[in-house]
Length: 390
Image (cartoon, rainbow, N blue to C red; front, side, top):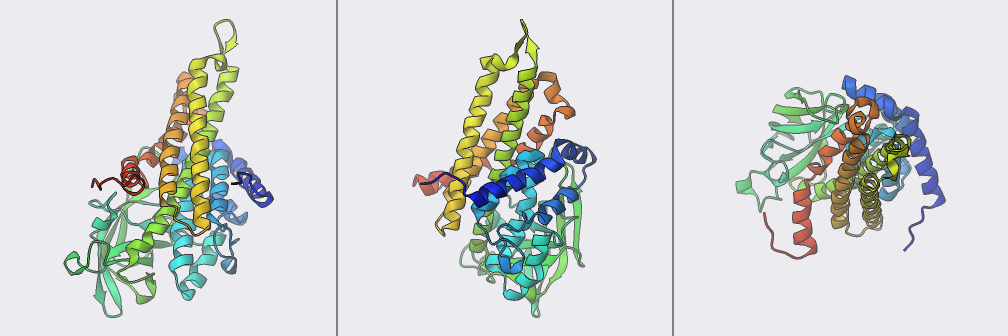
């Protein structure tokens, strides 16, 4: 078992950190205040070849593995963006790149993968619904057969970056439950243009991740062409799971990067802040212990994430590790950002400190893309062999 990065991975990590730090904390603070999309850094990421790390070489990517992508995302996020930046990798390399590379036909791959690698194409995924959050099997959006295609009707919610997306990965039922062989039967995946008749969207105001808008999406008899089906008709749910588990890996990378930068900001402040006989507050155990605990949790989350990514790249089951890594990272980032604010006192509450944004953004990822409770359900059932609780 080797925990050492290869020379190529070390170079990849340095490149990613350099891109992240080139934009830095102030860039993200300004975008957050303006609720502006981070277009400039995303283009820089694509220009550096980082968006295409896991996209096949034949389509403009590097053809590397999920471990390499995890390393790159972690370093980019630690450069200043925090967990919000990892969401952009969920949208494009995962929802777009992984889905198309594994499930797309030759025409779909040729049409979209090069644009994903270059930054010319942006993706979003429309999965969550008002009555189908953690339980994706309850999706009600229905695509009814219409000639050689379908007509889609339904509603999605909490869909990220819809205004910026060129394409939507849409999950919908293509069989009524009464006609299905179970809840997993009759769910299909489609990649459609965001701009089309019958599709509309409305923004949702929210606490954090304010540089990436969230929206409700409405489908009113929206036309889907036969060529827009991705994967197996009616068999999309099982295929979707692999996409969602790679999403966990990218999420964890962003949270690890968040915890790293928040801890660093707290330590820098604590070393400079002097109280009571001129001693820096970094010498007090009340400051040291929570940050040390956050560091321990962060390192454990990083290792579990690397294990999940390595198993993925080896073609082995990795769902448990991906879920456990995400659970650990959510706690690590939550602790690191909270204790960074506590370390800085009033200054930690100020936007100038940056940690309040990191805290707001990271808080989302204890409930999304899978809640902590659902991770514990998964581990109890699949790893401990306990009776299904839901």
